[in-house]
Image (cartoon, rainbow, N blue to C red; front, top):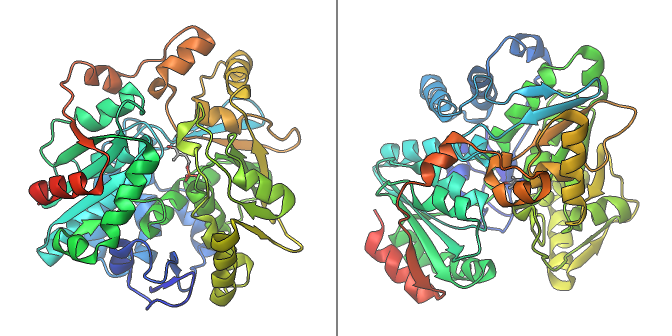
Length: 452
Ligand SMILES: *Cc1c(COP(=O)(O)O)cnc(C)c1O
């Protein structure tokens, strides 16, 4: 299987090369050249456990990895999840299910993709006899999940920048208390935007990038989207026939990576019935789906920080399909959007998507209501999805983080703090972080000194 760019001006690549490249050289995002049809396989898939299903799915895409190597890699990726079902589907009442995606090592859904990506990177290092240094910036979950995906893997190191004092204490501990020598938690004296600007500058320097074999772990990586398709498929197979035909998947959304993965399945012969894009107060996507206008906003920090985004980078993949796979149109739209900060789609068709928006004032109320109604504790991101479930069709709410990651909010709202043993264990470990000034020069010097 080959992978093409949404902007049509990059060479198609094989799976491993597309995963290693991340963003295509023409600025586009990689997608499979053709999509498989899984409809003849669905009956067989029903009987498979999570890792086995993931292997059967990924082998269709990762055609340049021998099957046994892929099976081993996938199995190891989900071996560190603490729930036997990996992605348990919990029934709250007749119409409402929760798909819990927070039983991985960092207690957020990003582990599903980043555990796999870490193993793919490790394999690549071995095959090529070359090391990889991952450089990323985080305001929370991504950094921790990336670090845990590469933890202790020979030939790899991770350098994660975050704004000192501006991620939650537990999130910082997930990055800075691993005890692993290949992890570098870089607390910069600046904001998340400063961290991103530094990253952009360092990645733009080709010489530095190649010399240190730098790789990014942002949410546009092809492997992340594909890995995320699997839990939708797994959950859908667990619904009754009637529920399959009607259920709406309700997804707390930031960069559109998670919900896009579910929708991609509908182009592969798996008829998921609908998706609700649940945003927080950073609502570029809710505005798009209600007005047809895609318009950049200013980020307002919220109680659901992993959804605090200005633009939803993975939306470009949906756009590619929406314009009939016309890469020229995608280039035109993205150029207008870049120049003017907005794009209006004429005769906008929402297709299978609906949307909602949840403000910071509403999140505590929703957490209380869900607790009262179902006896279920939702984290602030998942709470956004519970804003308004459809009264006349079943809902599958994706729970993207464990409430134990947000003890301050939960204590303030419910009067008690959820605890999780893996987070408790972190509290007694020493914090190993490196404070750096918010300059590209300081980060460059640090990476040069510590790259593997
Ligand atoms: C990253 C994240 C999201 C947003 O996911 P996207 O793929 O960016 O839409 C939602 N909830 C949590 C807990 C996250 O970590």
